[in-house]
Length: 415
Ligand code: SF4
Image 1: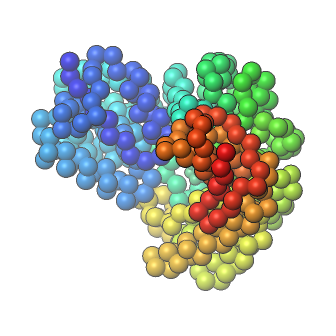
Image 2: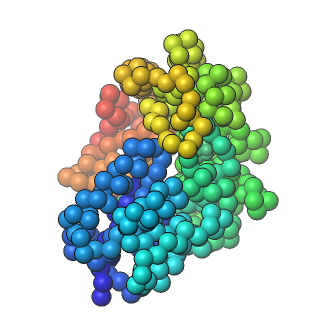
């Protein structure tokens, strides 16, 4: 039997896609050693020019180290660089996203192949991924209808489309009956779930919460404009994790416009305070150093960050992606300046997170993952990490903590 090795680049969605492909391989053996493989499937990422180079470098290194293996390109890079890599004979085959579920048949091709497929397809396999034995990630949708200037994703993953509600609920029911208590909903643009099926995230959440065994639900990331009244009404529900990740990307209105975002600071500000007043921790994505972010904009933006009740941030330094609107924008921000802004932003949020944790030391509900040497890690309802020392086996257990010790590194407790 021929052996297949999967090399995955990029985000969690790509990791899910690798699992879809693995689950469909019937006539091949999986190997964890690339040098022992007959076929190497490169599930690629193309989010920045740097990501493209990493994929290209990996492919060249494999053609040197393992010249007899067939390299097949899959993932987002197939849709941006697949054609040129195929023409230059750098890869034996190329498959697009819609072809992943046919991988078993596609790999049987004896001749070089270029099967890019379409960007409307939605997989019939919903992938779950597990952390320990207790938390499950469920991908509920694919693609994005937004057109942020810096982002290539809609071009390589297509417009937003949702998985069927029945399939999602069926899967959650199965997992909940197997002991999973926390569910994390993910996708390319999770908050757009349901718009193509005449339903909504709020309706899905309500149905999920009624499944026996579902104890806590988190949503990977939302866009500010996706938070409507129907969703706001759910925030008092006990099964909602008390943390939301709402992607602002910036706090300067000029920058939001340049980035072709759909949010603006005034309404973001109001919404964040409204949600924080309900006892929520709030995280966001933020891009620093995008072209046009001059000193004046940054001063205003960082001042506004201080006014927001933020507790977590994923800060990114802008990185150019060809074939996006931002790639040709001027003036660019120098790397060292972007780095300094990144540092300034993360330091502010770190301090806010610390203050939040000091105020929230009681009534923490923590789902622990598997532990080692008597130390267990988990997240509380506010998405703060807690490590618990205990002589008992607490893996995959819920624990309730009061008076946790709060330090720079995180929260700690002994049981
Ligand atoms: S919301 Fe914007 S940044 Fe996010 S995937 Fe869609 S286009 Fe890209």
